[in-house]
Amino acid sequence: MATDSKRPGSRLTIILIVLLAVSAAVIAMWRVSTTSTVQEAPYFPPGHIQIAGNQKPESLSEESNAQARQADERPAGTGQVPATINPPAPTAEISQPTSVAASSAPAAQVTQVAPATPASPNPQTAERQAFGSEPSLSDVRESIEQWRQSWESGQAAAYIEFYHPRFPNLTAFARQKNSVMSRAEVIEVKVSELKLSLEPGLTKAEFRQHYKSNTYESFDIKTQHWVMTNSGPRIIKETIQSLGR
Image 1 (cartoon, rainbow, N blue to C red):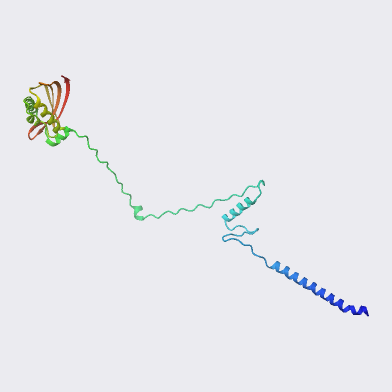
Image 2 (image 1 turned 90 degrees about the vertical axis):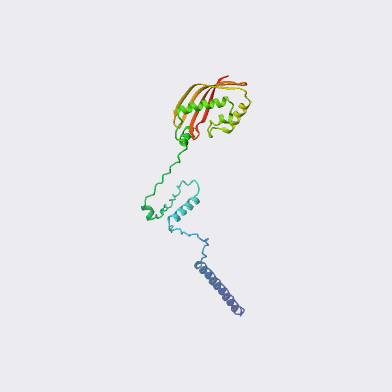
């Protein structure tokens, strides 16, 4: 009788154990099925292209990048040659369209002409253009004698009249001659070995000059260039070569 009274409790215990085992098995199966069916997708940043192990790159640049990454991940010393990365194809140059009128019409050639360089001033050419003709030899010979006499007589104004207004530094030259003549008591001027020659627009006179006063004496060779004006022959240029005193 004691054995029969314990049987209901034992059966209940067995039933509970079986229920717990079945529940644990159901829960385990549910977890396994959930884990196998639901996989968390990996995260890739924006612009990243995922390439599977058995998938080829879509473009040449993607394939080159993949090969470059494989070469970087390859351990050193393996002896494998890294993959060659082909450069991208050159971009075709687009030429600008040209105007039909511009291409058909030839370009006008412009020739630049350098301005003529002015020649250095020449008193002979200048006087020939200004007066047109040179004085005669007789006119110049007579004018030289009158010029010599005005100098000997100390008439500074008459002496300066024989010089052209374009004579170099005429004002200073006239002031100096006036000062010398006013201080000299006696003046003697001799002209010898006179040579006259005609040149374009002027007459050239060469002679020996002997000047003597109470304070000064000199021997010179003088060259004068005479030009014709409305008032007669005038000296446009004069040079002196000293022969001593």
